[in-house]
Image (cartoon, rainbow, N blue to C red; front, top):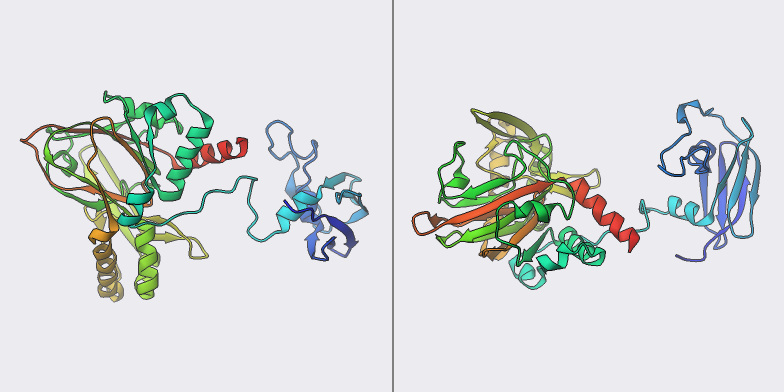
Length: 380
């Protein structure tokens, strides 16, 4: 942090002009300053939740007295009730900087990848690295997961329910209609699903038909002695950015037109409408949703049908390019963890009569993962 500090404050009608010692300045509204007072009367010192009732503040609030200390902190006594607020120079600087962080920990940079890049960059950990709850190792693990969207954990005990123990290193397990965990094996299942057959599963993200699809997915290989069944992964962010560069109109279409993802079986019925590529208001890619098995395009407006299918084909052709894919044949004891709203996964076909292929999987909410990463980042 630079030594920049407040030099003076010039009171104005509705704002205070804050001038720093490098001659930069910012106009800060009085009501905003009063609302952001963080003294113990306005913010609970233990819970850090606001005690001040914002709607009770007068819109025309003004400062009765403004003082700047030698260290650059600013103290304001308010005209309406005589309350005193103090803002240190560093806080004011952070709050007025463009793109300021919400806390002192800066998240890793997102690193889009194709198969060649991930072959060199994939982070692999051992279960013993995580089992001890060493905060540095856990932080490295979660940082790699945030950056590349996928990590591996090896030498995990190949026993049932062990995937839950791995997931709990992040947070609580998200229970879905499949339970706390799900089994993917070449055995008959009471609920029909292609995952329980030996068929190839094309690149997809899971449960796009839910109000919010699961954030972090874990897959633990218990046994894999069947012929075939290699796992493959593709970075949806990488492919979406490629589409934006090479075919901007297709990118715009897939990020603005909502499609329906749905599933119906005797025990459940879910449906959700969402764009295949989700962005924020600035165009930053937030999520990618691809699952041809559960996507329903019957509600597309007639005027966008041809353009949509052309854009969708461009995206999926790139997804299925060998150069985009990272292949990995999981062995017994391997766990792959990935961002389900970014990383597409699938598998090649396998011969269910040649041996047993048994995985167990579970989900963790994305905001819980992000919270754990940021808390560890601040602590370390």
